[in-house]
Image (cartoon, rainbow, N blue to C red; front, side, top):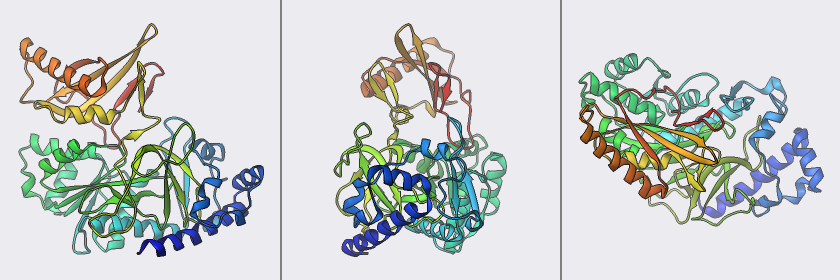
Amino acid sequence: MPRAELTKLQNERLRAVVKRVYENVPFYKKKFDEMGLKPEDICSIEDLTKLPFTNKQDLRDNYPFDLFAVPMDEVVRIHASSGTTGKQTVVGYTKHDLDIWGEVMARTLGAGGVTKKDIGHISYGYGLFTGGMGGNLGSETVGCATIPASTGNTRRQVTILQDFKPTFILATPSYALTIAEYLAENNIDPASLSLKAGFFGAEPWTEEMRREIENRFQIKAYDIYGLSEAIGPGVAYECECQHGLHVNEDHFLIEIIDPDTGEQLPDGTEGEIVFTCMTKEALPLIRYRTHDVGVRLPGECECGRTFVRMQKPAGRTDDMLIIRGVNVFPSQIESVLMDIEGIAPFFQMVVERDGNLDKLTVLVEMTEDAFTDEIRILEDMTRKVTEAIHSVLGIAVRVKLVEPRSIERFEGKAKRVIDKRTQVNF
């Protein structure tokens, strides 16, 4: 769609959703009234900054259904977040919302070459988590034979991959590596599988992990992005160029803001990702602060799609650690470790407080081939990893090498950080 036509559509849809939330969601009516703002004050996307932000605490304060813009007899699906750091955030869907979800996920898969002749293996979790059902919707919307494998029981997953011959897979990148590890341990050649492509998301992952997944499975690995509050997976997706993720901006308006001031930032500048859901009926959120750290990319993509692109998120502002004044993301550690031979793609960061100082210890798992009880080799490897991490972070960390398979494997999102300062894991 030409940008001028897309902008016209966005203007129409933004005006409609602002009117809808004002008339149907008491939370938004109160916010607008307190600001002296009326729906007719919003004429185009240029007026977006006049609108208030919405954050996760607002969803918790209105738990479970008070932010819904439709009566419950129009809601046909309910999902919710894990609620590990507080009350669950609850999202609802009308039949129309599910149609949109299927459409944006079909675009996601289609951009990776999927057609109705393919067979899909969905290894995201099914249930209140949106991953499994979102992937399922997209696959069925394309017209694929769809296998709802869910997570867990890796042995069974591999049997299905061998026997049912799916041609693409959806999973978290960390669980994909767990499957790859099983293949290697059981001498199963990835080339014997029928997989051609994989779509991975639900947690930050680096270019180094992408290469690892592509090499281990001999497939093309695509990044997908979403969040349950917006719709689930399918908010943004990679095309064949893999130069950023195209935002489905006929449905979701993206902004990048300064997380401290709330001011919009120009393209190419890193900040917090904010979305406005223009077409959702049950839970249309206005300027929702995701806490994901990202960049809106300037320029057009070589693929010809006119949707704006966003950079792969670097992490979350609420997952970011501040160690002795330095911002540290798990993805930075991952990018270092993936380039060191003899190191497995599994690690954990342990943060403790010693007096008034924070200490960061990185537990690093070695591969079977590299593991040894020879002290000199272990010391050399420890020094190599420590220096590599220091060169990226600029602070000293303690590196502890651990035995193969000693770091817990997770079927869903990997738990990379153990923060003993607050006893919160994420």
